Picture 1 (cartoon, helix red, strand yellow):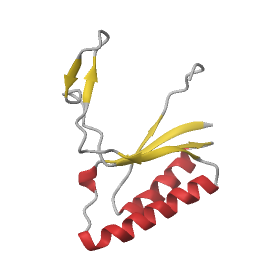
Picture 2 (tube, rainbow, N blue to C red):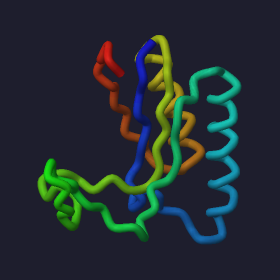
Picture 3 (cartoon, helix red, strand yellow):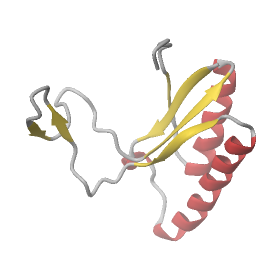
Picture 4 (cartoon, helix red, strand yellow):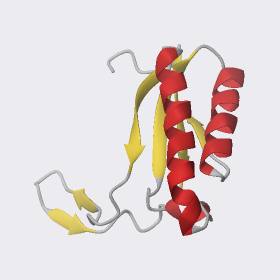
Length: 113
């Protein structure tokens, strides 16, 4: 089984304020379906009111995310699935629920994690 990250940046969700409650219900429904299917590992929304920091090996706190990387924002789900095709199908379900395309990434296998 492979773990997949399904995510979207907060700016990708372009819905009217009056639709947000429905979007939340739809997204939670897909989340519950992933749990019922035994695929759910972890997920949630990034709290964008708390600034990102980098922590150096000596413990020094450096303000902000890595400058060369896109800041992680929005929501994400980590699912454990047998095939990439399954991951693509789940990503499509989240895309429909959240009303925006989802980025799909595969975690590398690491025998120690």
